[in-house]
Length: 313
Image (cartoon, rainbow, N blue to C red; front, side):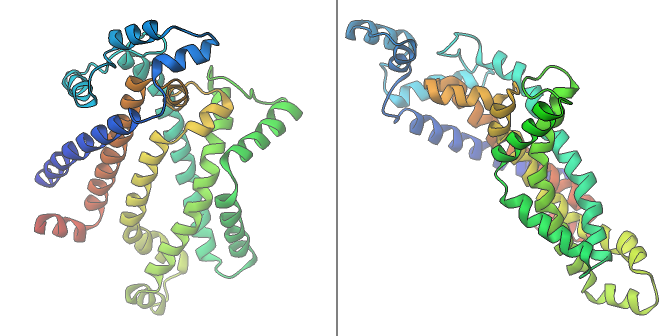
């Protein structure tokens, strides 16, 4: 397993490099530049000489390959430059905001697991009953509900009408509840359907039918035999969700004023803040890669068939 993990990590290095290179070149093809956007944001007009001088100070007067080479040389040493917007260290900005995003993503993921898996098992145990149909309807509703709309509804219900929870900010645990629920509802709806399909697929196999013919109860079969065999693909799906959550909480962070890296990424897009955007893209690539690797390794520990596949690879 260690050799397999080492190969996957080695493969991740060129992937991250290509992602960083493509994103860097695409960002610099935008129709405007950070200096111009700064004066647009301030509502003032600067002379051409001033703009040229500021571009030279930031190194934007050089060719794009030269800029990328300088950035890459510094990035491999842990220096991602300074923000064009506030002149703070990008690494410092990321370190300050990243824990909030990680907390929100992991909170939503844990809530999803603790709710979606029991609901899916209940749907399987009561297949084709009113409970099963209701949960299937919920899964379709939840996956079709836009996240921003659900967030606004929760803000209105629990923050404005009931006054139970704060609707903006990232101060204490009470600020965490609504963003976490908003982020997890879509995942819960998605995974109720996926968990249910995976469990029913295992039940339809020969060993599941054989256990039922021997007189084992459906609940016992599900817990002791079906769930362990269905765990590996579930973990792989959850690994994909971890990467998606760690890199894609922008909408929820903006709605609730949650101070994570998603909100600063949006600000960086608006201001053409290239160093912050590069760090964000790099973080997303690493989050997806490492989360998927961790899920694959955990799944292989559970399923011996996957370990044989790894040794053959």
